[in-house]
Image 1 (cartoon, rainbow, N blue to C red):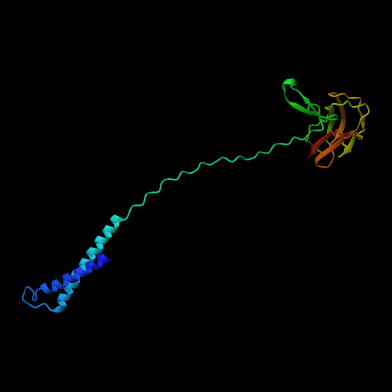
Image 2 (spheres, rainbow, N blue to C red):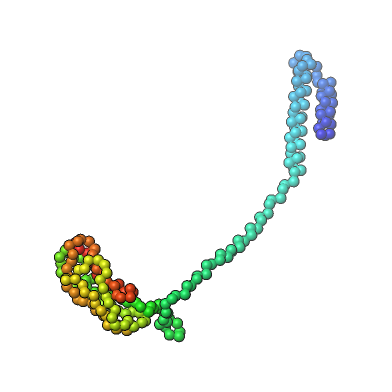
Length: 221
């Protein structure tokens, strides 16, 4: 601010000197009046002030320190978060387990005291969902296998429990003899006739004890 004031004072002094030194006449001999002289001085002062402002701006730009460029901030590496896993819970089975692989391990197979295969496909007649027409004749035959670990005592009855009785003359309960594990018993063959009702027809059986349920299933067209 002090420099600017001093500069203005210098300009004013120069103006006074310039006023004193200005010729009173133009080159063609005409007289310069006070108004023209004032305009010339104002122009000169404006030019001087503009030059000063330009210089000050240049000096300020040169004196302004250049801010240091920001350094790259290291990004912390992501830390792997351990997700707790669910530990499987193994429920104890009420059935016996047989290891088929010996002492060295192998496949374990669950077995049951009372169990059966109630329809061996190789011997079952008719095959499940065989298509027949109403009134068609066919044979009923299936094999029961003791797949459990207990021996079935003689005297278990196989009865008809559900569905249409398709055996000609009606099904008569069958009494099985003693069956050790792995033993089989073939039921039938019985002569049978497809019923008049269309759709799926199932004749269900049950072995005494309620653990074996053979069936015959056909489709009447």
